[in-house]
Length: 374
Image (tube, rainbow, N blue to C red; front, side, top):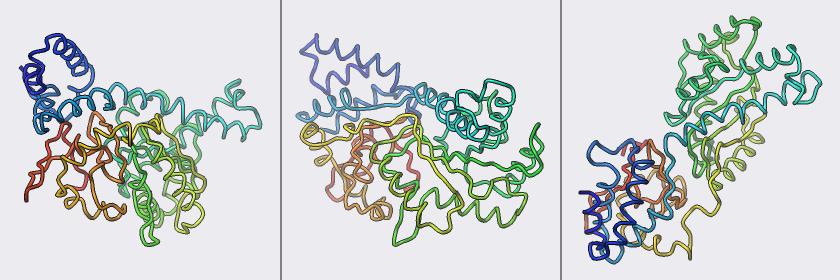
């Protein structure tokens, strides 16, 4: 029924060949990817939602909207995210630690595992790595399961809001682990998140003050260290590693710039050296742009309700924005993640508004759960 409704909305009934081709594509992509979106309900999944979404456009604009979904939408499914989680420790963490251990032992990195001494040194150093999730998208549960033989359950925490008792437990488990010394501390901290499009959620500066997730984590570390003293499990001047499973080029540039400024100017920072990594960096050509995406950008202009900006005005103003037509921080992304849709993607994909005061009501294709609670 959903396919028939899409055919009717798109005007395909008179073209059986086109309808057959599109049905095949829709069935394939729905079953392989889009039906897995976490906010679709049973009985109302991608095809049914797509039909409703397409109906909001004037008939002359529906072909542009459909073509955008077919040609430009980037959807990251759970199996694809799982691959990025699985590859994180062997492809990102391990090479970094191998370099560190090799320098300590005075050998080349590829020689670290040539004997038991090197292997033991590597395992001790790996145990002194703390993994901290910055959101539910960090998939710390998947990270633990896919690395159950590599890392301890007591060196991965799902959220950065760690209470004092948990800090104490982390310290106790670290120093009591086999082969560890009574004064051992975590030397490396990986802050892990699923996606960054602009980098501003992680770190930004407003009126000379640092804000964002890194500032919050830094404050948490400082407060817990002051209260616990020698029982605090993270070393002074620890190595900070910022890892996103997926990043845009815009976000990577911003993180490079802002973290360099923080390392130089932020007197209250708790970390020493730092690194920035990602499992997948999106193509620099991915954001919608003129002239290639002129038709889709025209839809963003026409089918927009400024109530969306008003709802998120505080956060938009902080980013120097005056409209949400192409998404937060003007990222203009066509990206959807299986568990949520970033607000940096074009609002045509995720926004839902009532269309008051004569504005155009917005119907989402992939409903977004808003972090800010609006």
